[in-house]
Amino acid sequence: MKTKIAVLGGGNLGSALAQGLARTDEASSAYQVTITRRNAGLIRHLEDQGITVTSDNIAATEQADQIILAVQPTQIEELINEIKPALDPDKHIIASTMAGISSDEIAKLTGPGFAILRIMPNTAAAINESMTCIEQTSHKEAEERIVALFETLGKTLVINSELMEASTVLGACGIAFFLRYIRAASQGGNEVGFHAEDAQLIAAQTALGASSLLLNSNTHPEQEIDKVTTPKGCTITGLNEMEHNGFSSALIKGIKLSYEKIENIR
Ligand SMILES: NC(=O)c1ccc[n+]([C@@H]2O[C@H](COP(=O)([O-])OP(=O)(O)OC[C@H]3O[C@@H](n4cnc5c(N)ncnc54)[C@H](OP(=O)(O)O)[C@@H]3O)[C@@H](O)[C@H]2O)c1
Image (cartoon, rainbow, N blue to C red; front, side, top):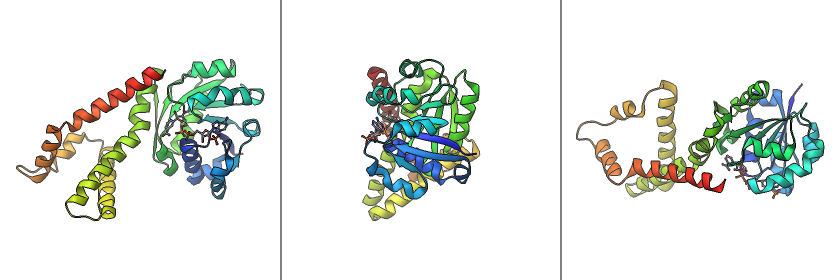
């Protein structure tokens, strides 16, 4: 029998999760996905991928085994109040994507007894390349099931709850940080001779290659950089110029400030 997943909040992230689950062979045999938003018409196209689209949160909750909360933090209280009559601690595992909201805060809204796990995926879930950090919990069976679900959407890492904010910055916000790097590299490529489209292809595929080198070979970035930087060559000249202008420092400072921002929102 298929595991029924309800994604409540079909915005940017919720839609990405549903799309990724609909794309996996495993998902098509193991998971049945329902996604909700109030303006369901805006995501009706997801039905083409075999996803059930509705604005009925209660019906979606009643039929689900696992519930993924993907609304904005300011919208959660209203949503939980709505679905509370349909929530069953003996049946439902609840996974929350919300940045800056702890499991305890959600438990206060749902009432006691639920397996509630914070998860931090990213929008690359849409193409099954998410990095999803999952909060370690005492609900081990629920944790295993959520890990299995998110393994179909990319890579997973189970982490201590104190690290959830850090994972938000590095993994979820990280998508935007890396995309901005690719955009800037494309603009540089444009200036040295490529049409914008070709520059973007070269920059994006090169970013993918660099990333795959680390993931496949388990090497350190500097080992791979050493292979590219010939003495007095153009790579080290460009790289050092970037560093003189604060490249690494800008990234580290950005990540730290982003982290402080989440901490301040809480
Ligand atoms: N975007 C990311 O990359 C990312 C990554 C990791 C975590 N997160 C977290 O994921 C959550 C969603 O982020 P997002 O960027 O996807 O936001 P979003 O695009 O604003 O999506 C939220 C969606 O929730 C729907 N919604 C609001 N109230 C609802 C209700 N009562 N019932 C059903 N649907 C409802 C909204 O649609 P309607 O107005 O039509 O109902 C909206 O489409 C946030 O808490 C965020 O912290 C996001």
